[in-house]
Image (cartoon, rainbow, N blue to C red; front, top):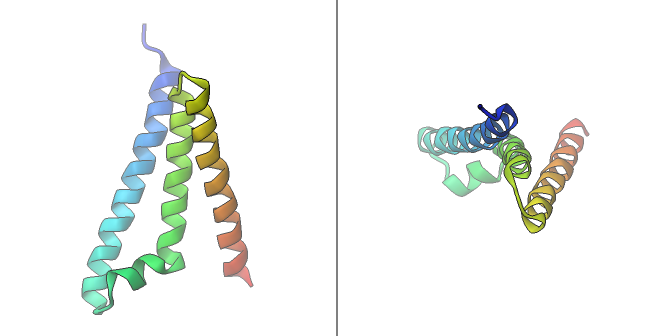
Length: 95
């Protein structure tokens, strides 16, 4: 029998890593097109938001697949940290 909750949990962290990889790939390309350094592109808020959403998805997925307490605590720390950073990022963008 397929454990669908585990499949969904693995789907979250895979989607998170895919989002991070796609954002990184796009901003490497954009830095080359715009003639800016990669450091400038990656420091901008337009890269930070997809990165943080990706980290949030990775944390949620890892917390769903963790089997030991310390793994759940580490995944929860990633989720909380990414959520706080996302909220702060959106607040700074609206000011």
